[in-house]
Length: 567
Image (cartoon, rainbow, N blue to C red; front, side, top):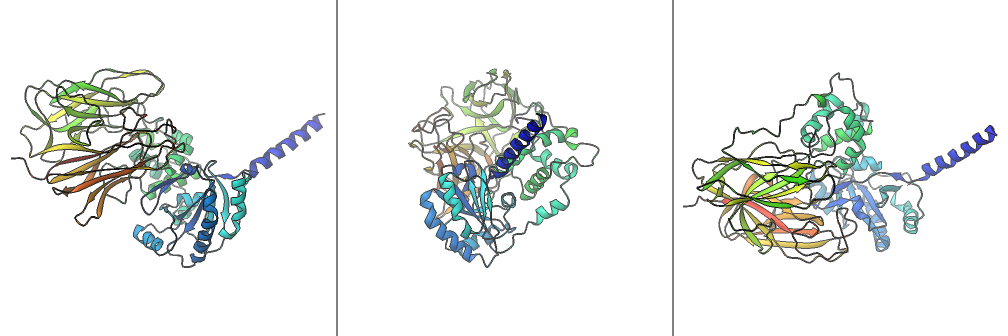
């Protein structure tokens, strides 16, 4: 009997083993910008049967025949729900070189920029002209090889019969992965290479009591969360910077370099080893207290009302008015926010408003209005925010503050009593800071995956633009800020191709821009109201302007001051 039981157990194990081995290779989700600045995420292609990616090398002279074959495949299969794109799998990262190479080929497909080669490595692409066929629903690789052998896999995917990954040897120019090869021979060291990146990029939010869902305070924590860390890196969810680094430069953008991305991902792929260092650097970090005034004692400390935050649930924005004690006009030169509970305060925005003004935070009744904006708090922001030299925010006597809070629940009921410190100019500065909303009205159809919207404004005086902020809700997809030149061409200042409702900082221009009177500025963008938007609460709803998060807004905020001092 025992022998029969062992035989039966062995047979079942063999069947299960065969079934597991027969499944397509899971490669996980990823997101990349293309050469035109548009964002592509594999899971957002779930409205397609499959995504065909061809590896591209701008320096490969023999790729032409593969591109011709891909074009023929696109003609045959695109009407059957198959999407196509190129991916720059080479070590070439010069955008001008890549764009020039794409312009020289007669193929109207997006060219994804895999500048760190991490996606191409994950797909195990080895030749320029090799294709990878991906199932966006299951996030799997179902074929890798030459175009000529791919048709059977596409037919099987449409029929729903694909149950494994087909791999066929491809020919063409070899793809080199120099950084991967270096890291394969010498795994990045946790203490000297990995921990410094985490300390500089992550621990400000991922700390005990912070807004991050777990603390990155030791090697053990990193190792345990390493699969999740890899995923959010490859999908560009973290660090929370959704801007295109090729358009404009911003001192407060949380960019992560290709080199740092490669170090982290290759270390994770190697098993996230501890290394030989005796001391774990992450356990030694002394983070600045978010309860400390970084510029010394403020001139005035203002307390916001006490807020009750439940243990669970989704909280919408809360706007409250805070009265000010001033008996004369004031000019603010710097401001610091100290949250009552850092673990639940996602962000807040603060405006100076007139005594009888009912502030809604969304400019509901006007297309464009200039406001006195005191900036606000965002996770990891522990320093005071100082306005540009010779500028300030004006608070007329009798005005109040309107503060808009956004809390996220974390499983523990708590309260928040945020305070803000105001540092004042002794004398009025030369320039007054304003933030102008540029917005549009819209009606987004149900299930529309790419509904475009646009707004513009003409400045009636010379101004210096210092910051930009995109604002939409859960269906927000992308937004771009541009200045129209005299010849009708556009100069792009900021592009947010991967918009997230969760992260809405004001991006501070490293080089403020003079905008002459009579210049038209533009805000353009799109919404994704489809079921393929994971943040969408209800794709069946037609959307118009509304103050609640389940409605929508389309507002681009321009922070600026006059180019010349007021008389």
